[in-house]
Image (cartoon, rainbow, N blue to C red; front, side, top):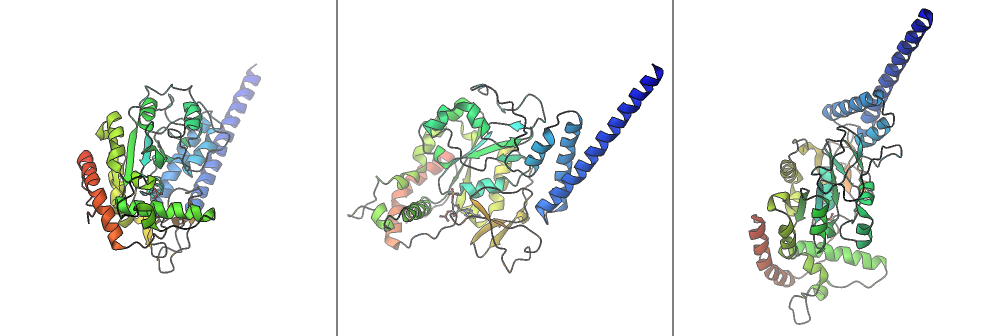
Length: 391
Ligand code: A3P
């Protein structure tokens, strides 16, 4: 008996030693992967990854064997692996759950969004999402899910919506963006039914510029269908020179009209408004404001952006995440950039930053005058003046 016991304890000790060695090897491997993945990222970013890796390895050692794969997916902020733990509750179960958190703290899971970027179309929603995703505590949904605005999707229920979410840790905040949420009448109530405490972000830009951007996108898709090109002024104005108020794209620029529906359902303090024109000129201060609104640590740094002269926009330098979706491509490094040897450069795809149509000044002026009273109403509602030209 005594011999068997001592053999048993020797076996246990051996097993414990073996698991520790496996953990150490995995830890080393993950930290190497992390370094390789982020190329020239800063020591701070590498350390953060190592801290996270270590945390999940400890959890793995404690018995949840599938977690490391999921954890490394979070670390790289890629789409989840199939080994991930799935504990989606039944539909409606989140109604009274402010945070949509799993009961086990630190558990890797799919969580319903706590932040929605609700619009506005062509306001800079993709840029905002990708930039926010630089933050350690943000887990973004890479595609637009259109859960609340498309009836067929909404019918699938919250379980389905949750299944579209990325894996996240307890500390992370899942964010989804679908720009048509802003203008679809049913959406505010549906969002409220999911979680009355959800945080909302709206990004707006000068309504005339937004309209030009929308028009450029519509024309690009018409061209792809071999439909003839149209002149902007023939779409935005009537033959008598007045504004074509029936134009759908023009309606999207009437921000105040849609805002009243949202403010009817949600208190103003749950909505943050990003100045899309400023985000283009200098993204970092706008991102700092979003971090503050969300109560996140200020972790996004100015040096994570650089102005790419070829693209004509800010792009991301060596980010701590892999920005992996079809709207984002690796851009060729700017030859004059001193970053080019050390960082992965990520610019938004060509569908962002299209050339706008050349439009006579008089047409722009007519549109600005048309939007002016609507804009003033919007400024009054949100308590923020965006200073869009009125002439
Ligand atoms: P344009 O293509 O008209 O320039 P959305 O993602 O909501 O569709 O918005 C697209 C707009 O995002 C683009 O409109 C572009 O102006 C703006 N944008 C803001 N920051 C950008 C960035 N860093 N790179 C590319 N486009 C950006």
